[in-house]
Image (cartoon, rainbow, N blue to C red; front, side, top):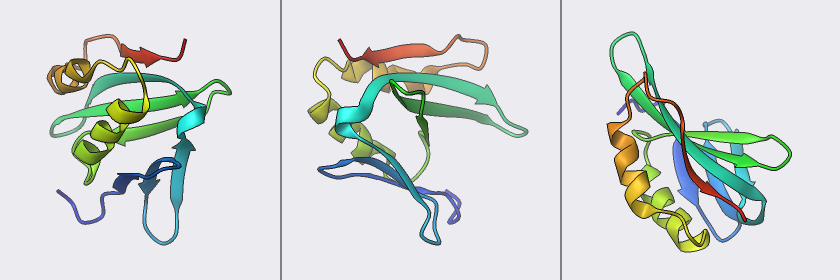
Length: 107
């Protein structure tokens, strides 16, 4: 884990990514409209992302190896009814050649 990695957290308002130096980006619970996950090839390793989206097209990308990710996934399953927790765990097995997986969509 790189100390420069963003810190991820969830609170009663939503999910947040703190990039340091006062740069916090997030999405409120009520605005999360969909969740998908995907993997990409980086120069020296495979990176896996969980992306939260809104109806207006905003996206918050969370890398699965960033600090706080596990806490955020527990909060997601508590706040978003119908989210398949097993699908979140299977995301770790995603390969770059796999299409993005839709993990949850607001009805």
